Length: 108
Image (tube, rainbow, N blue to C red):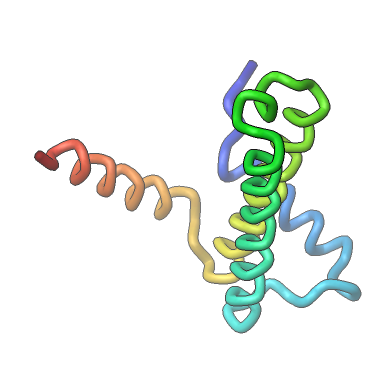
């Protein structure tokens, strides 16, 4: 299976935002904070699954795993909304991520 890229996710998020532009708050710097708060809420839902059912069950029980992956997708959707709000491109993210990776590889 082919990798799923940030660019693909952002394209999908733009489509969702366009479809619901009359119902959802706009994608702009002013709403970035709200998107982050929604993302944190979704992270909480991921944590709840693991906390309530245990890590092994969350990974091995089909229905729980499905729920876990779906909540992780929600986190990524809001993450991409935040990136769109602040105009952060996949290339910028890659540069920052690579820089942090290289810095962390040189620790200790």
